[in-house]
Amino acid sequence: MAATRRIKGRGAVSNPQGRFEAWTRTAEDDGWWRESADEEAPATCIHSEVTANAITYNDSPDIPFDRSLNPYQGCEHGCIYCYARPSHAYRDLSPGLDFETQIYAKINIAERLRQELSRPGYRPAPLCLGANTDPWQPAERRLRLTRQVLEILAECRHPITLVTKSSLVERDLDLLTDLARDGLVHAAISLSTLDAVLARRLEPRAASPQRRLGTLDRLVAAGIPCSVLVAPVIPQLTDGELEKVLAAAAQAGARSAGYVLLRLPHEIKQLFADWLATHEPLRAAHVMSLLRQMHAGRDYDASFFSRQTGRGVHAEMIAQRFQVACRRLGLDGEPPALRCELFRPPPPPGQLRLF
Image 1: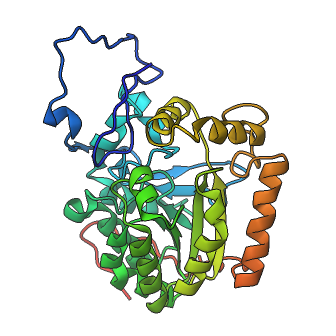
Image 2 (image 1 turned 180 degrees about the vertical axis):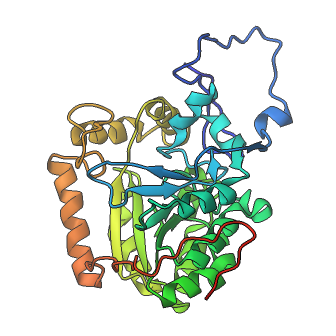
């Protein structure tokens, strides 16, 4: 087991090896080692990367979109529950602290996107921004890769959906408002808890819950249709707030809602168990017991259609509470259908549009 410790400003309390590494390392304390300030607060390192593709396609039957775009791999928000963490293992990096400190920025993603949208066989469909890591995470403030992507999508009148927990999305209200006028955008704000202290431990560098509600309010005021994504729902930790989160989002202007039960694929199982042992030791066993009850006796069941909501009595109770609250709050509508017929491919480099 990897050494664990509470680290200010970071979600993970350990940095275990990725599952593809060839070597196994075990930390031993010989009495000489002492934690230094640098070890307590590891710095973020941004790596520039040239990507071969901008758009990623999927054929998962339980995901409402078939394509997505992620300008970054890794996320400085540091959400301990992030299902994207295991992707760092493909780089021989840890899904733990490495995931939130070693960030890969796809510096040519706008150029690649323009090329892919220009292909003769391309057919538009809603493109999801934020399916893996948050496109408005802290690195975006300086690098503006998501901004570049939005500029191309607005130019081409391409429909998009977005998921974020960052207030930085407000910077791009001009582009999002322009897209909304033509029915080309739908936004979802991810919100797991209203407890600022708990949120700071779960999602240490994400916007506070109240700040996210403020962002939701500003997006709605700008004419952008919005929903709230209550994710993740963690039994015995955040599930008791389900109705309160939905009510706060409805008051801020959300018109639809969704939820996702905590998912623990691959290395996240141990990462989350370490986090519980460090931050919630008295509730750790109960949390994991309830999760196993909702995942067929396992920490996680990856079966389609049940992986995001679980199954069994406890899962059904959460689903019923969610449905009842949404009906009462007017959040039971479907997100608007986005228009695809306005799409126009970008012109080749150096060529202007005729109209």
